Figure 1: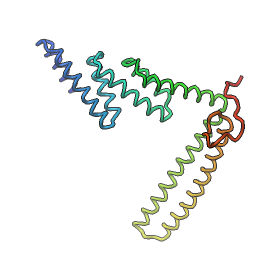
Figure 2: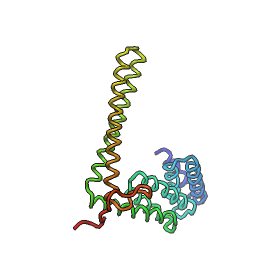
Figure 3: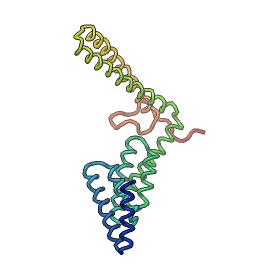
Figure 4: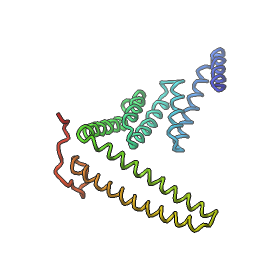
Length: 219
């Protein structure tokens, strides 16, 4: 709030003295520079914020518009890779307001829209896929908890030097290995089901185990 108050006072003073344009230009230049530095440091969120603040002062500034569009597209790409397709499309829609002709933006949007359509078709035809995948993911999350218990037991041994703690860690490790083997088997079976039912799911070296069924929406 204090910074906003200072900037507001500076702009008011500049307006009264006929220097508002130069103050606004200084703010935009500073924000654009901050965006470039943040981008060079790999911080997309900070770069996006800096460019956004520059655009608030001068929505027509070409550097701020290009910088914001580029960074927003990078963020959308990360969201896409994380499976957040709707968020990615929303981010691209915002970026397109400042650079609608970006070839990279348009290509990414097309790729995401195709992936979203394919996912919707698969989910409508194979409703069990999503839940099965979620169950396997939860199983692997539980493996992390089991591993943490082993580490905690070993740390306890460091203080007590009680051989029973090592015995407990060994037992937990056996249980962890059994769960890993079990979940690996589930993953293999899951892949086989997907390969058998979804066209293009397998690579060239891994043909489908059965003729794929149609992906057209069911009646």
